[in-house]
Image (cartoon, rainbow, N blue to C red; front, side, top):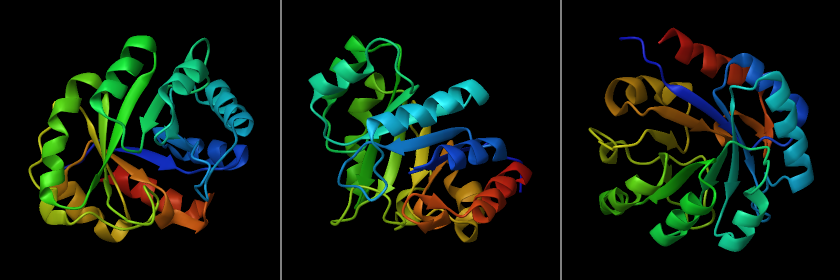
Amino acid sequence: MPKTNTLVKICGLRSEEQAIQIAKLGAHAIGIISVEKSPRYVSAEIKKKIFKALESLYPKIERVSVVQNCPIDLIIKNFLGNPSETIIQLHGDEDIDYCKKIRKEIPNIGLWKAFRIKTEKDLDKIKPFEDFVDAILLDSWNKETYGGSGQKIKSIFLKDLQFSKPWWLAGGISIEWMDEILTEIKPDGLDISSSIEISPGLKDLKKTEDLINFLKKN
């Protein structure tokens, strides 16, 4: 199998200690959930503390704030000035106008947009967003939650995808699925959360290390 340069984002962390440990393992991005109803929710104060520690120790790592259907004026207010994150990840039902406004008002922060894929037709909705976001994230559809379910997108939907922006695959990412991901699906990055957890927000560092090391070797 040819070597890949697949990026890794570990999402849903809740502690500064684990964020630093996982950054040390070689993750390219760390995501913090700013959605109050999520079991992985972290308050703005703790999020800032985690991101400031990462910024100091691992300045090249992407610091991703995950939001969902947040009032756009609140987003703009929170991210103007000197925010501690480098990326806003929209993980709800945000439309193109929402993305355009963020891009205009906060041009210095990266913008990622997640799409929940239930059928192949859901992929057709993505194209119009490509000019207004920096990356696309594909997650599995689940009626109970917008993310972190551990469910996989059907592989048949993911073959030969072409986007003009980098794209990340989320949902049930594990070493068992990795050969197919790297040889047939070939995303630019993997967004990993529940498959390496002991409990919501608490990562199994051995599983995390094994997965990151697997990707470094392949």
